[in-house]
Structure formats: structure tokens, C-alpha cells
Amino acid sequence: MFNKAYGIDAPPVIRHLAVVAIVAFIIAAGSYIVLEIHHPIWAIILLILFLMIGIWQLVMLLWMLYSSLAGKMIMRDKLIADLQLNGDEILLDIGCGRGLLLIAAAKQLSQGGLAVGLDLWSKADLSANSEQQTIALIQKEQITDRTTLKTGDMRQMPFADEQFDVIISSMAIHNIAKTAEREQAFAEITRVLKPGGKIALLDFQFTKEYMRHLKALGWSHVHRSQRYWRMFPPVHIVRGKK
Image (cartoon, rainbow, N blue to C red; front, top):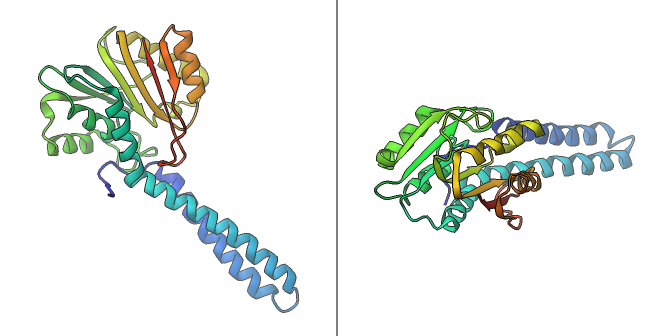
């Protein structure tokens, strides 16, 4: 059920949650020990308060770990299955990381199909994220003949116009902080995708904005899925057709 091959998402956030939970439990215990004799009511109030804070941080930490080790695999399978690939597509995975979507998509391709992964290889967004790690996983899955990697920025992609049939992405576009730069990324997505091409973007943030960008660029069949709770934070999938 659990698969650690594709890394832990947002490791700094997980470390932060762990630290806050530990500190909260320490404060809960310490405040109760110090105040229980002379201020028993405050001792109980602070104990309950900081226990609740610590438990909530711990719940989020465990949810994030489940998301990284199991939930995102479930969502990956859904996203890829819903694409209904023919097998001969030229496909781009934006922010491919260690190959979560890329490898699953490549396995659906046949002779003539190609899955291209684009990433900047940030370790802050994904543990041990590197081109070498992804290459090793691709080799392990024996799909080197239909997979290739590129280092590059989604705001200025190193690809020709109308090169791809399908574009996919998971938990990547939200890492662009500025709205104008996310808009630039969608202009690039539109540029490199063939007319009639499809997109599927899984993300937890800015998904309504993604829809607005696609519609403003003239896309059709743009819609956003229900919220899925298998991942933390909960995610939507935005789909559309150029």
C-alpha cells in the first residue's frame, strides 16, 4: 500500500509540524506540572489547550505522510486512467519530480509514444528530488525507450510550439508565487500543446485561477473535479481541451 519511491512532499512543512507538536506537548506537560498546585484551573486549561494543538499538528503530519506514501499514488492512478490514452501520444509532465505521473503515463504508451518530464529539481518541494533519482526509477521500470527528462522552468519551456498531445502536472504550478507568473506558465502550456490537446492538473491551491487562465486562453471543456481527500491538503483535478 505504501510506496516511498516517489519521495515525501514538502519535507520542511512536515518537519515544522513535528517540531510544533513536540513543543506543544512539552508546554502542556510543563505548564500542568508548574501550575497544578497553586493554579489548578489554569493548569487544566493550558494542558487541554496545548494538548489539542499538539494533537492537531500530529494529525496533519500523519495525513501528509499518508498523502505522500499512499494517497498520491491513488490520485495518480485516477488522473492517468481518466486521460484514456491511446498509447501513441507525446506527453509532457510539468514539475515531474521523481516521476510519479511521468512513469505511470509512460507505462500506458506504446511504440511511437513519448513521456517528457520537466522539472527544476527543488528538494524543498520533494525529498531527494533530483534528475538522477528520476532516471534511476525510469531505468528500474524499464521505460527508458519512451521517457526523457528536461531541466527547465514551466514559465519558459525549452520546447517547440504545438509539440505535445497531452500535458499533466501534480502539485507543481502552485509553487510559482506570483499570479502573473502562473499566467505566464499557462501561456507556455498553451503554446507547446497541439490544437485539440488535453490537460490534467492536480493541485490543492489556485485551481479556480487555473480554470480562469485556460478559459481566457480560449480552451474548451474546462472543468474542475470535486475535492479529493486522499491527499493533504485536499486536491482538485483541473481538465481542459485546447
